[in-house]
Image (cartoon, rainbow, N blue to C red; front, side):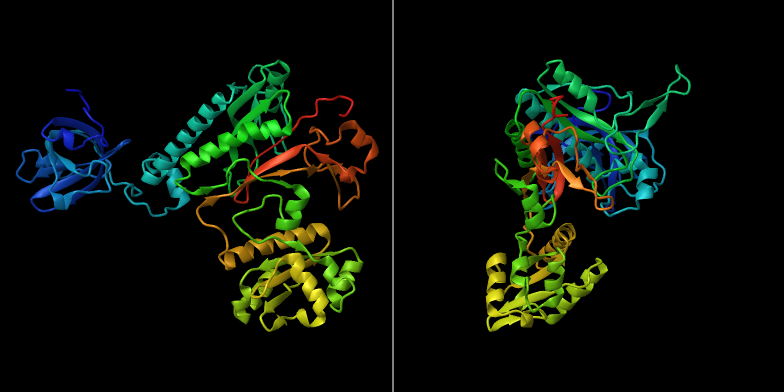
Length: 499
């Protein structure tokens, strides 16, 4: 018999009943039932219940064991009685009667509980990371990450991509953050930089003719943590393609993303491919952001003309000075009490706005602090522009274009949450395309690159030479899922004359 195990702790089934087996693992739980002592033995593969009788000669060895001690047990597999079967465990229909035990490593009292799934302080988890990694949720997440990477790798290779590993110690190639620097032993006073992204190396591969490259790439950026990113380092699916259009890029990566989310989404609804494409300007207008959460059905509308020259002087005067008005529909909000609207008004002030004006379209007419300033024709124009109907409310954001878009996007998210409109258990993807090539610096008035100066402008050299720079779009794109940018890219400018 093998020194440590004949089976793992997730393997035993009724077919093994009557066999003598050997298992090794960690003491996950102990339960003393008087004449019987039960141990849930855990390894990477699962749990197996083991039992020892108080009359057994090995009971004195088993009884004092602390949780997380590492042991090897040998014993007979027996079937559990019908009333003791644990349907939540793959091994729940059998147990092992311990005949022999070897203690591989006896545990001391632990600073954190392994077999509980409650939240623990992060500093405690990090200090004892070697224990934290044993916890079921953390273990499951580590395995999920590994499985997702394997799935991505398999799908990329099947799509004709070749995996390369690019250097880690390199020269600086800024990506918008600070570099991590590593001193050189051979060249005192000189430093290597850790790559913020494998940008230059993958371009070398393309000009060398390798055609389709990918890498699960480590990236190092000396920046603060974000809600969706740990500080310092992260991994990304990095890829590059030769002789392709933007449509070719979408066609190559959509099946990979769709397949991975379908494989690991646990049955959640998923946007079918091809994913919808939304122009940057439309995204800013309709959703108030270039990272729209399409689980939220609210669509923002431009209602500026309904207020131009109206009796609502606050908006009318602002429009004369270049402001716009965005209308954010709130489906079914007419049924909400006055406190709902007052609460939102107070919240808007905490967001830096003067308040949050609204109109309620009730069955007996329009109501609210703004409605009395508008005639029926303007109210009808608001309804038509926004799609609001009887029983809905319409909230307003009035400011210069950028500020109005940003605030209306914040209001849209708030209303989606407050009214419980956001679709549950779904992944909703979209591409954001047609990003502006240039933007005006609000402080200096200068025209600057809005994002990536090395992307290809739509219209090429002719657009650069003949168009207003602020009207030129770039072949830049983001893929967004549930309001989070999952990836970004561009068609690279390979033309020196255009550059």
